[in-house]
Image (cartoon, rainbow, N blue to C red):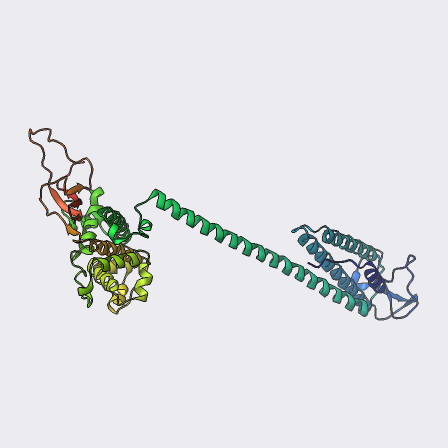
Length: 443
């Protein structure tokens, strides 16, 4: 970094050329430099001009020239102070004692020159000179250029510092991500990241239960998005829930009705190897094929995959399920148009937040389906009819604490199923309970 080195001899020479100061206030002998004497009444524009003690006629012109020379020197002096101050600032970070001392000397010198310029003005010792004025203007531009160079160096230094900070933060982020993944594997051994080294021969029902729990979480997340859309569109949530399941009387249980609706639509045809979708390679699909698809598919980002593979089997699955699950009236109410359906019907996929949430849910169901057919024999799905007697072996209530004896009857109240919220599954002799809503629950 270049430091500013003061040149007192050059400055004094330039200063003497402009002002030609004399202790007694006598004008120089040469006729080029004319002394401008200010009147006592302080009217600067009416300075009286003397040349060898002889008055001149063009006093206003000479007064204007003297003022221009003064202002040019003043601006040159101020720009020099700015350049020195800028150099002083940049020398502090990083700390450079030599540059600080050099800039300090220049700053003090320029402040002295400014003080001398003030005294010349007060003593009315100002000499008009076009050459001196031009030199002052050149000096001003040089000092400004120096200031800009210093500022540019400062900005470049700050930019390099920010780049270093970005690199450091990226490294810290990568380190944190690695630690988080490690902690996730330790704290959640059943998460999908724990499936990275899974082999088909080691597959067991616990793996299916883990994937099912992730699937249910994703379904519930989409149900919340759907309910939020209904509320924003001004729907009557209670009426909408009862139109799906009339058994829901408690407004706090509306969520179960919407969850049941989504599960019925998204799990329809789950027992079919291709979800009832046409597939030319269906005869080649065996447990190893489904397991391989599961391993390859579990890490993909669904919306990106759909955009890149619009004609894939998963793409057809998402298209079919969306058009079945999201009614046109619902889509129009949420978004004011049917653009998403038009995009799907034309073979594409909408890049919206709502469809992204749907695609994430669809991916989880697709993974569960692949894993179900990775078993031999494959996992089967079941749900309970309305009015069936509740069985703790095959069912789990979504509302806790609803079963108790009737206080006014010697008989035990026999709970009945109002509707299935989440279907159940069977893998060999292992039963994964379905989640049901009990008819006439009391809470």
